[in-house]
Image (cartoon, rainbow, N blue to C red; front, side):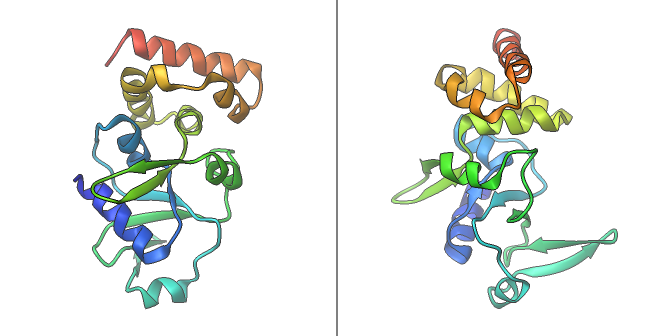
Length: 172
């Protein structure tokens, strides 16, 4: 099993319900991995500093910003009160996909359609690479009606649809 997926399983065991939204979500949907600096996930209820510390998570100051690390030294980014690229956390949790990993284990991930919108809005090089991977391996699985519910308007929806079709036809 991929080490990031193993860590995601352990985070769920530590913290309970979590929905992964970054590189782990891309890996879960496409079965293709890329390097990542952290594990990003959404939780329905805020986890206190004390709860993290009781579970041996660490808070480390990096360049003036406090970062959280798991007991196994993976950096995490927890979304518990701020939206993810203008997608409400409640919508991410409500539409998430539960994906089997290993024997009798599952990991929740943002649904494919939400992931596409989040990556499209982020527009970093790694996000565009992720969109290309998604187009190559998951294009036929996209629920376009669900995807449209994540977009701001018809213009954004059409731009995303065109982007995904482009990546499908022009793999990188």
